[in-house]
Image (cartoon, rainbow, N blue to C red):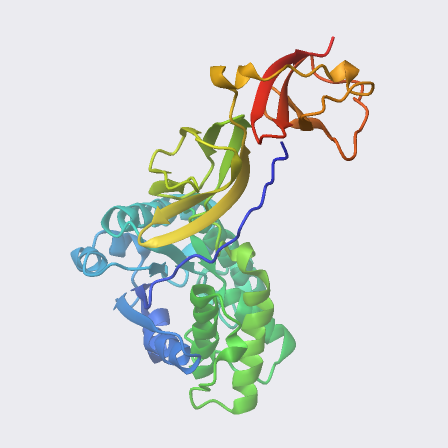
Length: 404
């Protein structure tokens, strides 16, 4: 028997409309980022419903203590919940970040998974201030420059995302790419901290790309920016985000179907290896089904069967399939036919014998021979095998065979 491992990769079914909640402060509220994300998505024929819970200067701690924030979390079945910290707090020394910020990032993600279990948490990785954080420069020199502050933000936002199995929306990395490649694009307002329209557009293109997993160059809405500037920002989002989605966690926590099988003649043993699935369903290809993740199934006939697993989570499904072959063991009635002596087939082929197949006990085809094209018995066979013989009358018989 040949085992055919034909894995069918099917696209995960997405909801008709993705719902996104932004939790943050003035960096999120500036130029109405959530509204802009929905608007540019619409221009690319994508439907995003974006809401926000923002408070000027709010820290993750403040949101973790806010009844309004939790009420918003419970208000809808969100697909994504975005968390944005106060602009400075993730850039502070690790000793301060580890008690002032990280615990509340973890607490908020835990709350998301409890209140809105189908939502994917996303951390909004913000940007370094245009000239660094001069107010804290003396106390912590890395904050004296944009590069130093931006590096600390990236390090600590990445840590928050990695610790909580969240996506990292690399808005600050897109900003850095733009700063490094086109100095004519001004991403800041006059305070050197908040985003200009171009800065918010860069953030919106980043979120669009992460949520839809689409090339941001499909966006046709320039948001009243110079068309050349808008195009350059979209290209930056493609270079940083779209071309490296997995680097930001996108797709890593999707439901993935997966299972392994072994066949012993007519008996299939299957083991679930799916990830991030709430429930599992199998179609064995013979009008039999099961919702048990691991088990066995016995087939009633010799044939090829397609076994399909459906892995479900939050109304989404991923599938994969494996083709197996069932070999039915002989029963008493089949033993009325004469037995086959393999070692004598090269000298004497019974006149009513059409073909012979030799299987190992795990169902693997080891050798076969036809009346019309006989072949020699190979060396190195397993100790115990099963002979399947097909006769002129169509009957198939099986018998044990000891090779040595």
